[in-house]
Amino acid sequence: MTTLFFRKPRIDTSADPRTAIIDIGSNSIRLVVYQGPARLPAILFNEKVMAGLGRGVSETGAIGADALALGTMALERFASVAREMDVSRLRTVATAAVREATNGQALLDVAARLGLDVDVLTGEQEATVAGLGVISAIPGADGIVGDLGGGSLELVRVAGGQVGDRASFPFGVLRLAALRTKGARSFERRVASAISNAGWAGRGAGLPLYLVGGSWRALARLDMHATGYPLPVIHQYPLPAASIMRLNRTLAQIGKGKLRAIPSVSSARAPTLADASALLGVLVRSLGAVTTIVSSFGLREGLLFDALSLAERGQDPLIVAARDEGRRLGRFAEHGDLLESWIAPLFTDDAVALTRLRHAACLLADVGWRANPEFRAERGVEIALHGNWVAIDAPGRALVAQALFTSLGGGTDTPAPLAELAPPALLRRAMCWGMAMRLGQRLSGGLAGPLQRSSLGDDGAAITLRLTGEDCTFYSDTVERRHKALAAILGRRAMLARDTR
Image (tube, rainbow, N blue to C red; front, side, top):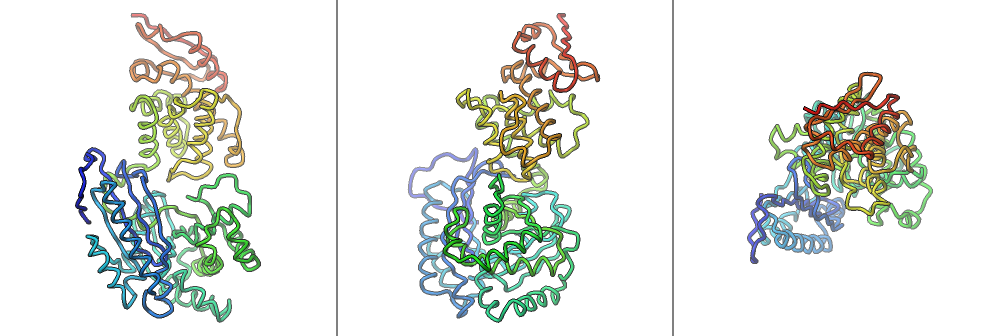
């Protein structure tokens, strides 16, 4: 870790310190600055420079002069940005290009001059932290992680929240074009042979392959564009074998100029997409994987996760992030957790997976209150669908969005594109959550006390709201209407139980 020295008066960030990572990769150099809950801090700043350090390494064994110049400028800028942002802890890591280049020390010397202490990761370390990154974002991940960088490909087995076997291969995206010059069959034989010789052939049978790396994320964006997918969120986007085959055919026919014209595809990634797609096809067949799932988390997030305590690692990242968002955008920090406990007795038959989505929705229940009243429901949908969440797939986002839409006044309509993402029965369940949340919000005014002193119950015939003492005065005609609406959608009648003692 690097401690930065500041030349200007420091802002007090001790209560919520900022951390940062400079990642010197074979294709890009990136600075990311974080602040917030340790389990899933928010990103304050994210910038990359496509230095292409590994391109020269694959051709001559050394980082090219132009790439070295770009890398130097990137490190100088990023060190200055981190200093100005009052970053308290900065970690700098380098991967395949720097560790393999004959002149890699030149960039390390630049970093040292800037006060940056660089950890040059081994291939095994790179694989480990990539695996931890996927575990951080998909806690139940059970399969093989494939991390495609500019200089190398790492494979790592993950299961039960743990990293297992690891391997590193010299199949970085900047090296693939040269390997493919001898034809598709020669390329496939070479990759498959390397996978087999390392003992990984068939290791993914019946399991997903989790995809990490910018080139594979770009492939997912291209697939979204080609299929008209309604939710342009990369994390946990599935790419089954049929989609990979279709991408291979498309990339063989489309020119790089047309690729660059697609808004969702980075012009810097376009030249490597065909190579990345070809490698992915061979890899899926060699491993025997049933499908692929894109992860937006990788090496950098793995480094953060590796630094956590066991207790922090065990926290649900979706709930942590939703609670932090609700705290920042809502009126009363404790309200979301209380609201979830208050409505929970009505939904005791929800599976664990649904219960956590309901909890996330309750934590976000107040995020629309600052919006124009005419657009509060739409604001809820926007946050649920487009928020920077992990540990949630597209159907899960749709259910949270439906609950927020209903609770914020959208009623029982289903706004686009939710019906394309989740089945009707689950969306209706989320509407019920939303109706219950809406009742709780109106009854309590967003405050803790009324929820703590009242309760909801369902005996199969009636939805009973119990109030005591002076809290009986909270039951206005507006509250009554919302009580009846909740009962109706659940197929019950509304009942008020007053205890005036």
